[in-house]
Length: 410
Image (cartoon, rainbow, N blue to C red):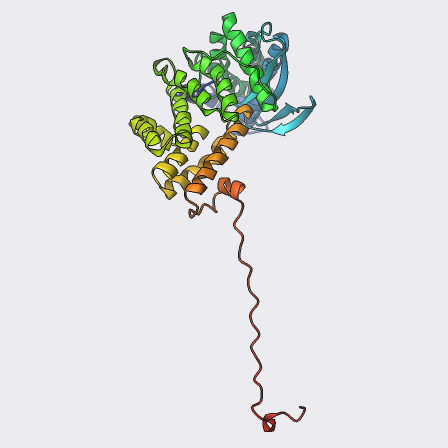
């Protein structure tokens, strides 16, 4: 799903506000309670430990709900990541432990439909929130029980802390719009029609095929693009990019660019940056420069912010090929690996290949530019070889000028 960073920031602020209010209005008064005086551990220490435990428990409850919902909805589980650790299914079908990034607030469960027409992703979104509500009930029980006496009073503090974390995550997860990380509320809203569910299933299956090196099935390409259908169109886009069918890729991108008013700024700009990079590679410098000059100042600023792998690729190509700026190209290359690392698996390898193509074009255009201190560059062109140090020449011994200068031993 495409992300909306501005809405994400608003929700983060709301979550922080909830935490501050609960901390000062509910938890802080517990510190002055008569029961708190009899605790063997300081209430502040209990609070800190409860935050750690609460984050882990809430992340686990969320992903357990995803897994159970996916099973009920007739999906296979490809991977489950909780706070960066979990398991992934290998090409052989076996599971392996892994440490990985994730597209979610605290984790991610990647699913694959068993049948694109019958698998129902709504269970996946329902059960995650049901399990968060289950955690709410457990916390309320702990709070009520802990308030009964000094021996168990620590449970009241712990329950209040964990409940706060749980509610914060629940609010984020049920928000009915795409945020900066994957949330179920948006999916729940758009998956009410059978057509959208099938399109979503096709997208999941194609993403899994690409990630495992298989040829994905051809998906329908939507002419009227929204943030959701843009994700479906992305499958066809990256399939064409992988084959270096740049003309076909531009056809897909133009559908998003022409739907500017119907998609978020992030979706529109990502398509624009993809097209910019393709133009630098496939068009004449004059045509590519004309396209770049036609971009709005706001779009150019977002490209220069280098927040996505697509922006980085477009930025280094524009600055190297059109502008001839070595320093700005270096600034873009410095961010390349980090931005690619954040991509989902089905896009990551293709973006790596496209970045390599871009760097080779830059090297061909400017063979004298030195980026040897940048890891992305060295991964393609290798570490520069250090010159071997020559052994110091031996000083010639002075030879006696005549026989009279020879030593007795001689």
